[in-house]
Figure 1 (tube, one colour):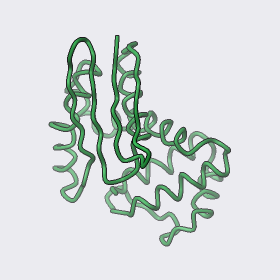
Figure 2 (cartoon, one colour; figure 1 turned 30 degrees about the horizontal axis):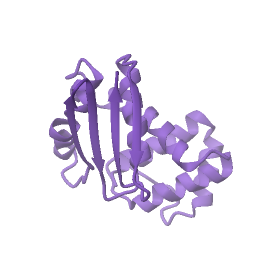
Figure 3 (tube, helix red, strand yellow; figure 1 turned 60 degrees about the vertical axis):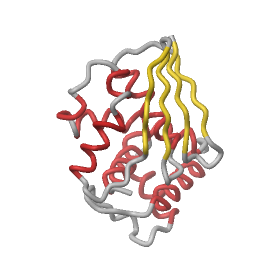
Figure 4 (cartoon, rainbow, N blue to C red; figure 1 turned 60 degrees about the horizontal axis):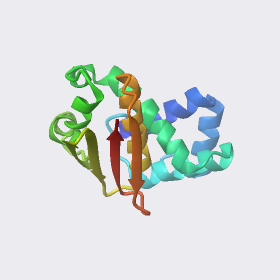
Length: 176
């Protein structure tokens, strides 16, 4: 998994809780690299899962909810880090329907060894349906990313999601 996700996860914990909280989470997760992440590095997704598990244990907030909150935070960070990609879209629907065909293609240009999730979207009968599938159990982060995107564009439609038990796939339906 790309290091940018790890560095942003640490930044998220520092911002939402405190730098001390982030240090306690990293220490409690007992990571082989002691939480030394670089944005261009690659790390096992299990490291992120261990950190989220520790953050959940220490904060009392369910891990799925932490991932959703992190996804919302991450969407805002992507707007800052990758404006040349994000500014290409003028609505949530426009962006969300191009994640798989444009945004993840750009991610692979920036990070040739990246393995982003597969995302497809269809717009029919006033609904946008997004199919998410990954080899990692990160669908709750995707949920937050979709919510963050909708919030960014002021999209007031309702969002429903169905997540697979293993957290590796989900279907998001935007109605309204």
